[in-house]
Length: 274
Image 1 (tube, helix red, strand yellow):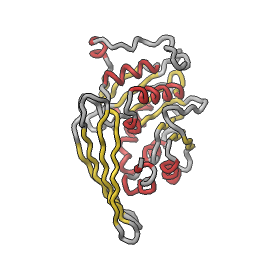
Image 2 (tube, rainbow, N blue to C red):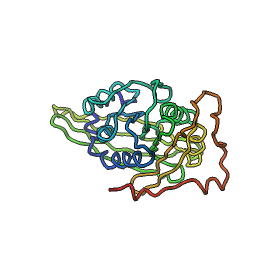
Image 3 (cartoon, one colour):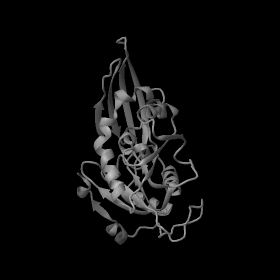
Image 4 (tube, rainbow, N blue to C red):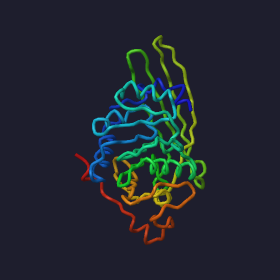
């Protein structure tokens, strides 16, 4: 994708750490208050430019995993003290576990249930028994509406402005289209335009809950009007390692009945705010 390769070096002009501060602090508080003892080590799957890590590294010993070496180069500049690992979050295996696992909006790039399930399994494998995983999708099927956004910043040598347009041409599938238009001005004042179309995944809450259970987690939803719906997955202390193709002992049925949906835990995030 152009945004994470050709345009990776422009990320400071697209979004800097300050833009991520409020959400990152919210996510950090949520992770710390959702499991005992409080987590010390954190795996950031799909860490991208490192803007979340910039704030979370003060609270956790952080390991950042991303598929793009160009984005990791950006992250290393702002987070030199963090460990960086190049890898696909659907398949990477680090051979160790963490107190907590964090999957931010990179999960939007999982456009099929198979890919989304693979990310959940990666999170489960790397989450210690008794640990916690946090998933932060951009959109939910139930609440999706077409939208536009814009932004961009100036630095000493260059400037960028962008517009983002999100549409759903086929409400019957599990994807939406995201069109980006970028205007890039270099240090000599020359301007060029770049367009990129991405396909993002869109799943219902019940699908998320079902797949998290199937991956081995005990899931819950945290709803917050100013942040977004996020999903917590607790890994039980007595949980067994995940074996591909084999249902984990002690998992509940992945089938959701109407009563189970009603009882799905929805916790207010108001007390998590400072």
